[in-house]
Length: 355
Image (cartoon, rainbow, N blue to C red; front, side, top):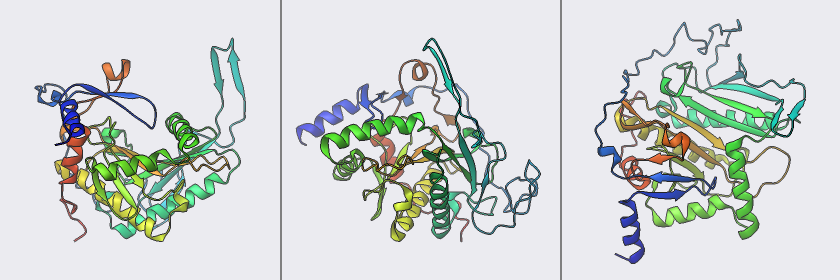
């Protein structure tokens, strides 16, 4: 055992802080807190026994949506403008400022919905990889169309999976919010990426991935084009990040084989999540990529975040309250421990509906 390994083991058994290199923020790691007795809220995760088609679902093929429009009898992915969009492209431009302390400005944008498939009961974890490739193709098409619009400077693709994450409709789908400003989370990353690139003439995530692949402590899965990593600074108990191995700044730059490998990485990590507690695992996920402001962003590398809330079982959720809200994020188990748990899980879905 070399000195650095021994130091790492000592630190990992003690309360310590880790730096998130993407945002510059810190997180408190408190190993052993999962041993405390739990008398808080527990959730009843019922079996996921949804039908292939639900006549009452607003998103199923041929059904009427809440705004009165009727969905086509789609057989693949289906994308449409959100009936209750949080952003509007025709919002007039105006600002308000009072004594430099009260500032506001209007925000233009477009909100889209992408149904992954016509099947009401198939999540990404349960879909075939070739069908996930179709989802990625739709993401690329949406990104290309939205980014070409003059007032759109960032395109955020994200999924809230499960009622625990506030999903208002159980039909598997994601959302795409495209807007005038770069939102705060990717903006924080963008600042760090630019600083690192100007200093080293290499992208930060590329160097970080090389280090993770060398250490092999937090790698959950990898293929020829992508790696699934539990970040060193992970906040959520089973948080992961999919990082592309080649220097790719937006998803439209992914080549044929890379799209296949991206689908494979998504399929594997979502399957492992479901296999962890034998449930349809809730999470919020999203793709971070370069701004769409027409400038070159060599500092950016495509990556996909997964933030799942479950902690010790299917019924116990990690809460971001108290200290997390007022001080800084905190986690109870080390990222290395959660990476090992995920790494050792099967890659075949426990439900195996595809047989």
